[in-house]
Image (tube, rainbow, N blue to C red; front, side):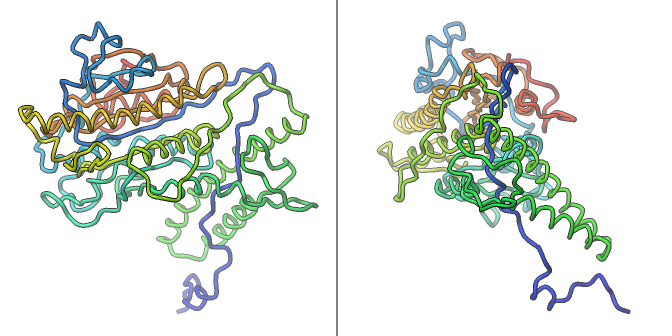
Length: 474
């Protein structure tokens, strides 16, 4: 019996029409709002991680009443921006029961607020992370749904302690419960991902091709143009629908999943094209002027030589800021180090961060080096926060319209997660009240749920181990 739905090898080799992974969509930019209207910039969400916990006595305020005037030793880098920071004390991680691989838990549970499945520890089996939950909703408005940035490649293989997959030691972002996401470690690749489509050529009806330029804020496709992305997307969707009636039920299910992802792209493309059209009208003088102002996109120089860890971290932070400024993404994660440790030759010693974190407080030299590492990491966080604060956006700053979370999934080298070091920077569009120290009664899931809610992400239930919206943010 002939199976008409079977696709032969010859057909596959010859090609089956349009079968492609869509490139980055055409350039988008923020269109200026109509005169007289109230424009509220979107809330961006950023997450920055440091492994292995902190030396607690040098991190938490000894007298909360004197905060932020008197700062613990390791918070001194934040002094210039401390009024923009909210310290959250008392948050605990997902209940860990019997700890069988603590350093595999600390990063993997940080944004999932969930423990890995101990019965399937050799494979990824956890939960969708908060950043990806946000990306599913906020990503339809941007070219790049989310950015995952790092210093080291996180595609770890093999098994680690107690048979746990090594991928848990290096990954904090999960698109689904079983799909870990890679991090981009090369700044040049990040820049290309963000801006490669800005040199693409949209197809113009009845005229020559046009170049949208370096930034969409200065050039946008005319409303009458049909972009190549749009025409290719229409072709893919049409072909997929025709194919659906010729394949097996299992393939129909796979195809439906594919079409769902294409519809998500279609929504994003519609939003982009609408903003392009509005921007083009404003540029042509047909749109109403607006009093809304913002700082120009920051200049980011990508070096062609090896750079230090601190320079790499700041450069990745700059790329995140640039992506936020140009609304190419509203969700970003920066993981400069993994829980299995990093060396910091910039600090003048060779010991590994993880090894230094294991001390009882009596090893003075070891403890001194650990606090220097904590201090050094917070310096990089402070740099990024400071730069976001310096960029004007409407009546406030880019930082005012962001929530940038710094933290760890372990409280200290003793392998517990009962007092997670956590700092929020930014005001979340007026929904977060910084410049404070707050003693919380809640967990990391409660915090992540509250952050996403302030960014306008609808949730059916709290994230992971969360039970409520953490009330301490405002």
